[in-house]
Length: 196
Image (cartoon, rainbow, N blue to C red; front, side, top):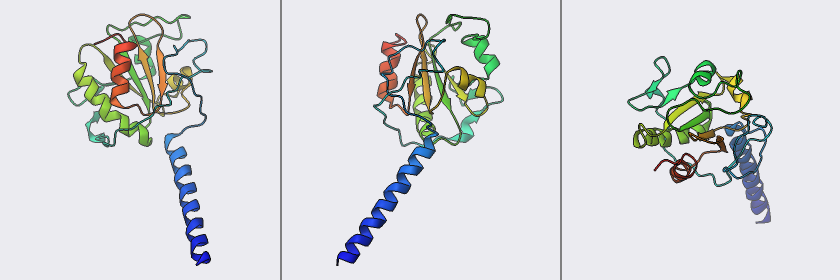
């Protein structure tokens, strides 16, 4: 009887260890820094002090990869756009020529730093698709593939994905790390981007 209990306990411990390792590796998380997501991103410290949100929840809907069309920079009928480093410098902020943050967009922006292999990124994508429809014309949502745009990932010190950058019209951008639920996005849109 004790032999069976010990064997079951060992199997459970091994399974938990495997699940824990799989969870850590699926996020591509290299280090964990716990900071409130309301902290602004400072261009001088962006690579040293990324901001996290510890209230992570996920949306179980999978990403429909066939909807992504990187060639014309659109996603279905929504306003989500994939950015390259050159487009980022033109549409958001030119970090090569500007020393101080100066947003160049027409409406507030949300930028999703993601990778195709990242499970939590796939959970955030449908939420961002919904938000891009709901806030069409009020908020621009961009996606940046950290694998393809490593320069941008380095500039913003992206060490964990998904990382979400909220850029208001005035003031400094604010970074959040992790798969946020829709309610957190709406709260950030209202409180950080000042869009209702």
